[in-house]
Image (cartoon, rainbow over all chains, first blue to last red; front, side, top):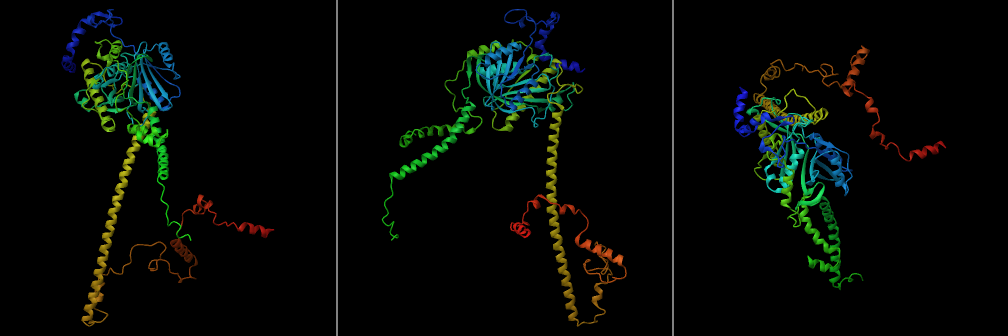
Length: 315
Length: 292
């Protein structure tokens, strides 16, 4: 009976799909279902069901901070479709080296954590053979190891990606959304993935930064198969971590290079911020010196009148 | 600003005002932004859209491949207010999970893991143990704080009660004294009628309770001893030597205390070892001289 009810509920949604699935049946091939004519790719080749073969290379630069390294390892845990590789020297020619590495590992995208001066973390997100690539500055990093984050979920279960609606506001956010959803979404039927969904990724734009959160979905009935509407209301989330905040700096059309498509007009590099702060402190001393010299000049310009009674009592 | 520079005339000072201007921009500390967008920033809309077309998946890909949900944000989130920001993210995640659940339900796909499905988790059991320990410790801390608070309140209450009792006692005493005075006055007025032997005086103690001994026993104090065990016990010296000794001991114990460890009192501690007051410098050379 339950099944029947479910069917009637789903009917509205399935209406669109029905005409797809009904004729599809007989056309089953070894590789999966053949999609109907409208599903064919633009190039016109007979399109055998879309298959996501995303593979992400995850590496970091040398001399990375422990905290950032932990963040990277957390992401490796979260993405079953990724390959971790050795550290890469972060120098001018790292782009070509990384491109080679990605090709060698037969990956289609790359996450590269570049740590500079042991305190600034940059994240390169690149689609590999022919771009685009994005460089982010990473802020507000909290790793999964923090004891405040009490959730836990299956390793390798496919995440549900949620995007805030302001990702559709402008072209560069749209592009970023597409890249993120491809890189962070675990491919369907990936061999390391598990068939259940028990966590949610949040990508939200606030203050022109992309904020990342990861929550575990927990239901009071221990996640039994037959959930109904009542349970839906009781559904709660527990944060698993990690947390970070991405500030896009530049978007390049190639992978790790190429012409710039977008540049963040509000971006100030952390180096600049630090130098400003330093100069602020330096300014304090300079001000003091200036005041002193000004005082001296003033005293020279306005000499005191000679006091005629000054040595009156000396006699 | 220029005036300032020309008056002072030295090179070092004339870039000072520039610095003070830029300070106002960088007040926020960590998250600094330019106040207005820089004009040289590249923004190639067509290129971006082109690239988007290049990398995006075909339009009609099943939702099961993407698993992505778009959630409307009602209002702009204030980034610096941690609580509202996190709440916004939480609601977004929750809404997304609900929508995804509805979709999975309609497709007849499994959603959450069944309770008997065990597999490797993202965080290890050891780590989860730590998390649990922390939660418990926090709970305990809160409980302890509450207990302390309660104890403090109780103490306050007890103090109040004590004060009240004392006041009552004082009042009673006063009344009694007053009554005795009255009685005396009455007696004076009546001219000592009835003499000392009989009369009101005896009536006061007619209850029979008045001279009963208190049932409290004090250690080391003989029954009927009103000095509290401190009076010398002269009587019966020669009679029972053993008995007397024991009583002496008892008395001393009651006076000085008995039992407990003595070792701790006699041991050196860090304070006593560092205390050189007992040694005076002049002592040592004298001794030497004496020896020689």
